[in-house]
Length: 260
Image (tube, rainbow, N blue to C red):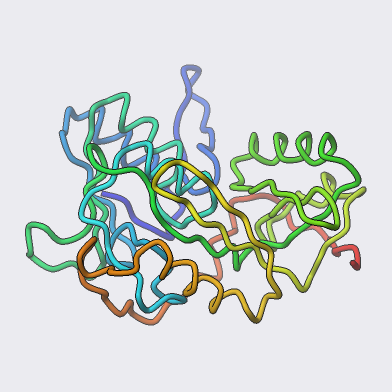
């Protein structure tokens, strides 16, 4: 069971030293524990009904998927969706652990939430509303920075616009400014990503105030008849972020974004 929002990413290495498993590691620690115990299912609780076809806070028409494959969940996480962390999905697949993503507070319905294991691929819309768009001088430079940020456990998305090679970077994360010295921040833009069921990925950068409307439009293209494809829409509870959720990332630094 995963305690979302709590710092449960600590472990002990072979030498007995305390180490950190990285950002968003509460899922990973839960799955690792389930695998070590030989459990066939690991239940993960969060503030949404399960794995949804879009962020229900932005797209009221979003539906909760009953099932999704490991690769489908991994692909959504890789492109910035707030679902099970990619590393936790990898571990679950290797160990043969089924993941059950459920809402909190939970209900007793046996089919509540989303089962991650066997199922369809991802078909979803992702709004990168908690990420900034950065523009680089070349695709090579963008790829190098993206690789470094990915190695630090950050979900980034690389895409091209008429203005150049761009990359999304989560907002407010400590320690990333050193990677972005030669890039400029496009403050007014927000990335909307469409994950098509045939494996295609489509990125669209829009003015930030228009992101929710663009997400609803693209979701309607994916699910013109959502009731026939997935579960009922569920209004999520009020969302709150702990002021301590970033406390383990590292020492605070004074960082400012470059103007666009």
